[in-house]
Image 1 (cartoon, rainbow, N blue to C red):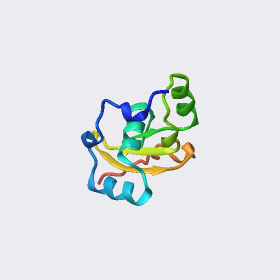
Image 2 (cartoon, rainbow, N blue to C red; image 1 turned 90 degrees about the vertical axis):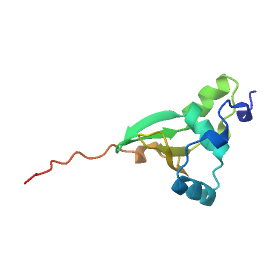
Image 3 (cartoon, rainbow, N blue to C red; image 1 turned 30 degrees about the vertical axis):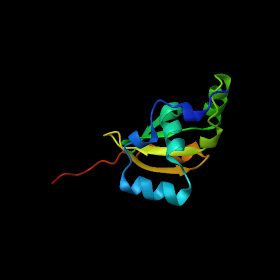
Image 4 (cartoon, one colour; image 1 turned 120 degrees about the vertical axis):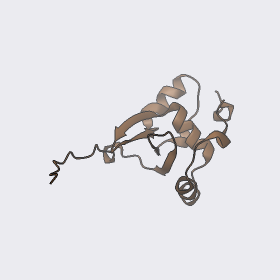
Length: 108
């Protein structure tokens, strides 16, 4: 089975914001885990940003290919439109990611 350490993307190449680095440290999420999510995770677009997510389906799909990403199961990475990582957290509930509600704005 291929090790996640065999990534071509070095963890030092990740465009992390200061907020993302702080939250990853608080939540015990490594840069290697974030790199796995960015490479193998599915993308969900909501609220003007892209959420990269590894769930049970991605773990099973990668296992069929001989890649072990079980360490990143349930990790969500919020990516800004410029490509920088805004934050990362663990959550197995994908339904919590919802598109923004469209509000009609009144301009005077």
